[in-house]
Image 1: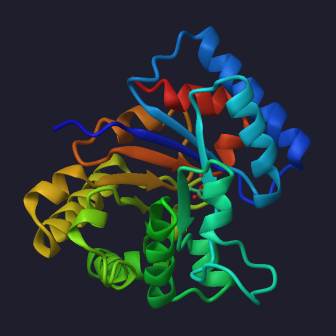
Image 2: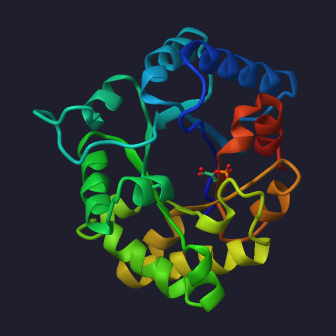
Image 3: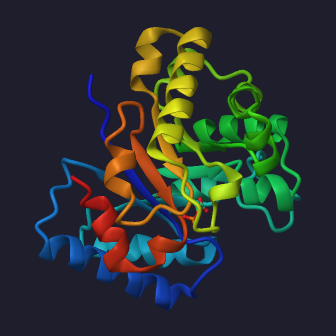
Length: 257
Ligand code: PEP
């Protein structure tokens, strides 16, 4: 089976809603000018929560082929959780995806695998597809235990996931040492971990489920590095931070073919 590549842009806490809308407009124009074939790859953006309503208005009003999602969600559905955002809110605003367990959430906000597993469940409860982020820090990479570490993170973050849910899961392998540092893992590194993640999914579920799960690579991806990484057999897309803030660069990443 062929897995449709997902080219995802994580805007993090950058730009206000007007700048976000203008970036999205420019991205859509750039892709249209290049006759981008949306059958070749799915293009997604992850704006800050406060931009999402504006993004929805633009996507729906201009019938853009671009989908969007939240950068995080609460593991709860509603109630006295000041400052949190429910998956129900994201769903109501037309979101398709939601990031779970980005390394910045794990490090800065202390999100554990167990919290991530609850958030993955919350995403599915509200009709959102989680993009679960996993990946090792520099010390673990240097110690050579990166595969074991990342697979443990994966298992802990999908605890309780049913086989039916697992089929649509997206996993983003993001080595922490490569995020925002300009250091890109080699395409062989990306393939090694993507294949290990797929093999683990096969072990936990089935070969059929493992064939369907999309595994992305993230970490300082640019238009120049994307084609080689995306050429790897088990890499089904990229999660892009910094370079997604430049419409032309991000459009060129999406046009990797
Ligand atoms: C990210 O934040 O998910 C990311 C991969 O960032 P960058 O591309 O800037 O390394």
